[in-house]
Length: 398
Ligand code: LMR
Image 1 (tube, helix red, strand yellow):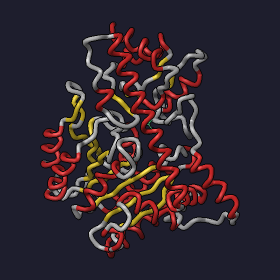
Image 2: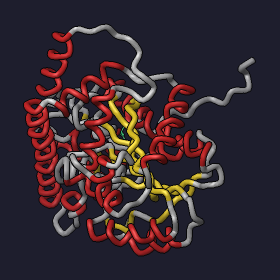
Image 3: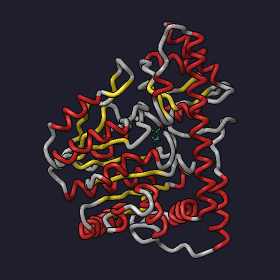
Image 4: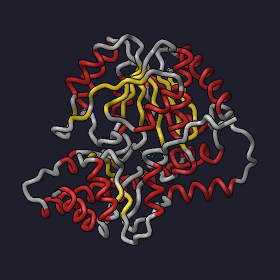
């Protein structure tokens, strides 16, 4: 029955985590998967989340099914978090938000929905992008192409080439964009570049699909929603999948959402109905605890304020680690440019290291990066940053 099945090569990110866990060297450092660790190398449990959970427990409550679209409080809070409270699109009921199983669940529901309702469209992703984007959209039956994005020569953006490519796409092409903290490169569009992109999206009638997995890790919670708000202010129709895995440190709870900002309330209603049907066909309805948790942290004023402070602390610690690694590398390899560590934003940096260098770093120094050279800066700490710099410097010297 199953002899013909092809062996699974493994996921490029989760496979590195498994190798790290199997490594017996006590000084090993995990800079692979996009997870925030604190200064002690622990996965933090945020006090705001802990208190929200205590309140949920104290309230008791049966554990019935959520509706297909998820918890109503969670959905309303997510729309406000993304667009800003009182946004005209929310007031006009033009936003269809569903709670999803992480933002991966949201991306997948959106992909299946779009394959049904825009069957002739192709998907365009940045070169490079999160490995799973391509698999996910191909899994929904799309042809997935890439648009120019990262410039390996400068460590910046190939913005003119990106615009030229998007200008040449057929109407209704789906353009996947990272709203902030680009994964894997850490290179984002500036506000001016988003403003230059918007007319192209509008004139070419493209459908932007934003992935917002690292909100709060760039410049701030509201600041990192700039792209979402700019597209909404410009009156574009678009999708956005967002995650709380990193911003609330609730990876395994699968807290995420998918929102469609539509031209009219009637369209949003149609989209919501078909998103519900899509959910029903995949996993029926999302998890009740995840929905309540997000609704509580975002919706109760004291918890919300506390959470925003906690996100700021995580963001600032990462910025400090970027600076520390930068300085440690410059001290070891003077004359070499490590400015990318300071200019790239969020959890990730693209180090430009080759697959062979990444392998040597792992074999000889027990420092784990993704094969593409992507480093999760959030795995650095005062305790390991000098060691990581030693390893990188040794490998980069050749
Ligand atoms: C990552 O890119 O490392 C994270 O988004 C985790 C994942 O699911 O790949």
